[in-house]
Figure 1 (cartoon, one colour):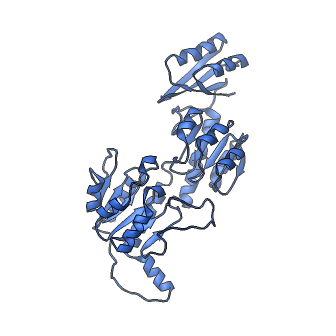
Figure 2 (cartoon, rainbow, N blue to C red):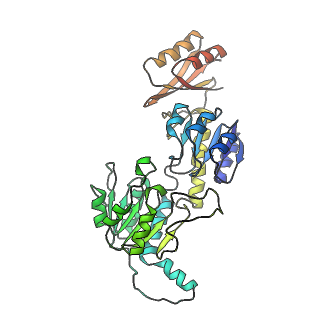
Figure 3 (cartoon, rainbow, N blue to C red):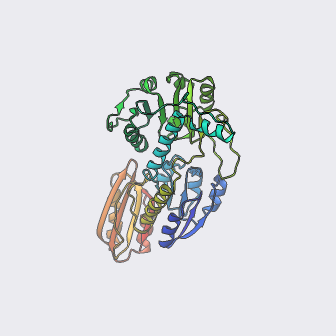
Length: 398
């Protein structure tokens, strides 16, 4: 089998897939839709990060593709609905770079509070500005976290350890950690927080969620961070509030439009403004996080191909399986309708196939059943299963 790895995925991922027997092709940057369709001919596994868009058109054209690995937290760059409809497994690394993002957020909160970037720029320009004006401790300050998932909740813990008071807002009911307090509305959080940090997911409904209206409701001279998704924030509105002084500082790691490869020009309305930290989407880019992501996603991909296991898949129902038994293993993705298992087992019974073990899981309109059988399964039986109206994808591991 062949795997295509894009966007500088860590060599640890490549090493693990190579050990599993995959032929590996790597490319440094992202590919556009047409390039990706061409590159996926004869490819069973695709590994990407955040910039490559795996659209419905790509998935429809990639007839050989079995699984996609997002070597990052988010999966909004992948059409998950089409992936599910095609029976294509998708895996990501929802926890692996959490700590790295949180540490960057903490570093940036302190840097903005102390105006370290301005002090650094002055010294590089030969200006000695030893002054406490505008420089503050973070201890005792109020941090408002918008989005209390894996990253937001861990940021809450570390910020409280620094002596900060923590508020959070999430559209889902989340358990407060430590002494953090849940706000019922975003407006409540913005009215109290002196620093606001965004950690929402990449769902389409979050596009443009933070703009002129939200900035106006923030406390005067507060700090603002966005380390989640670029399209969440109106950068022109942020620029206006920074220039007016309503917002005292900002740290931004993600942008609505980002270069596809290293070295491409970058332009932002936030460039050149004092006490603004701009970083090139490196929240999770530490050596430790990238090794862990490479190991985690590559292992999930390898396990799915060799055993059919789908724990933590974001597109298929989750079935935990061990290594393949002596006989064949049938991996059957199907539409979740009444009677489908009777049809499948009926075909196997008529073919004289004895079922040794069977595990079924469903998710919405999709079902996934893994069946271990004794002895060979005839080509005729396989063809009959393929022809069932409920069939989405059938794969046999010998």
